[in-house]
Image (cartoon, rainbow, N blue to C red):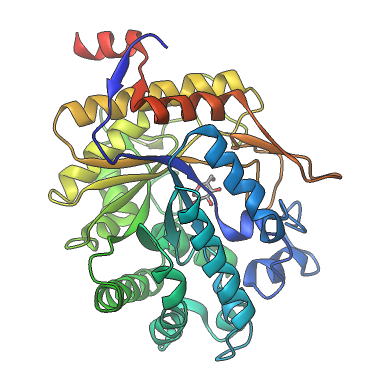
Amino acid sequence: MTTGFALPEHFMFGASTAAHQIEGDNTTSDWWTFETMPGSPLEEPSGRACDSYRRWRDDLALIVESGLNTYRFSIEWARIEPIEREFSEVAIAHYRRLVEATVAAGIRPVLTLHHFTNPAWFTARGGWKAPDATRSFLRYVRQIKCVIDAGADAVITINEPNMVAIMSRVISGEATLDNGLGGGLPIPDPVVRDRLIETHRATADLLRDQHPGLPVGWSIANQCVQSVPGGQERAEIYRELVEDVFLRAAAGDDLIGVQSYTRTVFGPEGVVPQPGPRTLTGWEVYPEALGEAVRHTRETLPTTPVLVTENGIATGDDTQRINYTRAALTGLALAMTDGIPVLGYLHWSLLDNYEWGRWTPTFGLATVDRGASFDRTAKPSLIWLGQQSRAGIFDLDLNRTESSAS
Ligand code: BGC
């Protein structure tokens, strides 16, 4: 390591996962239904995924052995409440054990209560559009009180509500997904958006009552929206509808989760594709997005501390992962140097996992032998990140610090 940026005390340095993407056999969830229905538009089903519902100890061991200090994972509502109002004691005990074991291993658990998937019954009766959706979610959250009490360090209520409100449009097969701006994601469904905001606020209140002192927030998919001359108006409209409305709804929270991968650039006619290398998801390789996402989040939500809950790259080349991440951490360090309080950095993802319909985009810091043994193997990127966590530094990309200083 050449130059290190000293991290603040208690900095959370870790990796993230999500239940459906790693656990396997999530048969009572709406995504399982979507994956397995005749004519499903998805390329591949999740199947046994990384088998983490059984092999969670192996996942935890990767974190512990690497030197990282934080593990973000999600609780699967569909397992806790597979049938409406019927709660699984077994699933609750499972997640309680996972949190307890994480704490006992000296790792800080960050719990996500909702990461894209719903119980199939919830979606069948209208999903987030059903008038009593918030009530259903709160009922689930009350049931997992003992899981949170087992030692959660922080709670993310809903992962990427902006993407949830977009996906609900896509999955329901709405005729017009064109946002009228000349490219980019569809605009989030306004009914779902408002319901998610209502649910987040009510959940944050409930958690504040049930677990005083526990930091609570939600995590937003940041698009790092930029413009070239003539594209500013489109960029502003898009940023407001796809991102800022969700950021502002976090006012008063203890933290805001920032999730950043790439950028979206608008010109006079719409989105301008950028030249240069792409990741396995087809996104522009643009690690500067993280620093910019953190800065934009701070401007929009000026008093809420930031927790980077996801950042990473889909690549089969682990050296590229290290280079991308080093550049992203450099941008983050510069934002911190400018005074933005950042509670931690959680890389996406711990494992090569199920990328919502496909297995080919590999985001993991570790491989999983899905064909046979399900053995995990740490990649050099995991070892590299863990060393920084142990040393309490970011390993900076000096070229980038110099060029951004000049
Ligand atoms: C999601 C993850 C996903 C990742 C990469 C985020 O939108 O929270 O579940 O795998 O990005 O696409």
